[in-house]
Image 1 (cartoon, rainbow, N blue to C red):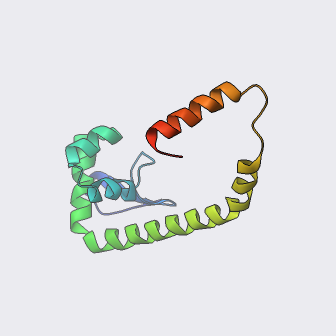
Image 2: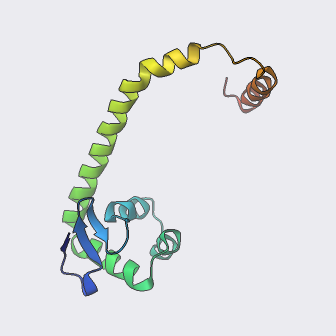
Length: 123
């Protein structure tokens, strides 16, 4: 874990990427909320960060915008690749599960689920 040049080393580089020191929260997590137009105060409350942490992180993001954005895009790309891999990997298994007959004794609950799906227009 190497420290970045930020006030009191709030932002550190770990094996997970740029992170908030002493937490498992990455700057990419913060970027998700920033991209969703969350205000910093709401991000701070949602992730239980101190005033100093959110201030330092937002300053770091603004100061190193190109670097953080490039790494964030890479993280998003890797996440999408992982999602596609596992979706393809499990496609056959999910199809087999969907074809299984209902378990005995669950007719009533299945009827309730089907009724709720119909009510919501999900069937």
